[in-house]
Length: 114
Image 1 (tube, helix red, strand yellow):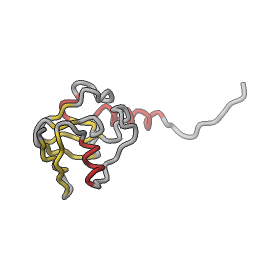
Image 2 (cartoon, rainbow, N blue to C red):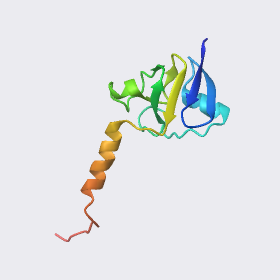
Image 3 (cartoon, rainbow, N blue to C red):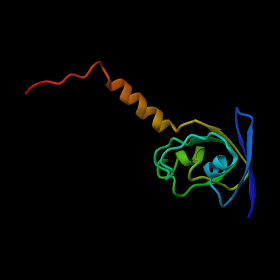
Image 4 (cartoon, one colour):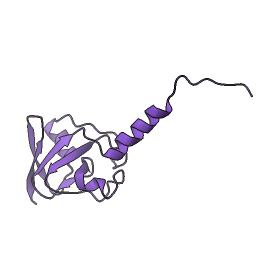
């Protein structure tokens, strides 16, 4: 069983994570406040940008194949090397989706009687 160092960019936090353990599980074990919700790779709440290193995350269904090259879901990601990740960074698709929702909101919604 190989352990890897996971450094959180922009924070003074570094942990050791086994290749058989998710980054989220290690964060919870070490008392690091990592955001999460579903814990099954769908909601993207635990998303982080991979600055350096590699992860395995075959069950990260919330990420496209292209997004999974640059982002990880800490609830699914297991380190394959030492890592530097930036927590709270979301793939462009989620940012685009949020902007589309905001652009569609032209004011208050009112009900009409038909």
